[in-house]
Image (cartoon, rainbow, N blue to C red; front, side):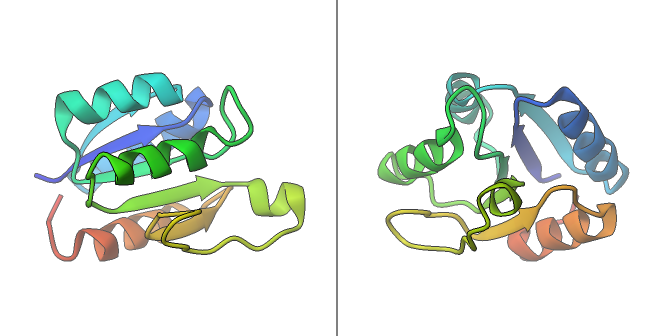
Length: 126
């Protein structure tokens, strides 16, 4: 069973994502801040991280992704965020600045979230 860590400061987003992903038989853990997220990564070694951008600081998600990559975390990171809508800018994968594997805008349709997760896990079943 693939392990997914959701790092988002909005409990409603975490609960909704958890519900959709557990329905697909993924093992889901959560953290509500960058600090909790980093600790959870060390403790559970997730197969995929779903990461918000704006938490306690406006760039917590970006900073966490950068730190994870510097620390050698090579598994997929899915950025789930509304920052594009807020800033009007388009964000995409960038090896150094935004070292994530995919972006999904909030609010996300459940089917799209499940589809992105399955694609990023490359056949690792829930």
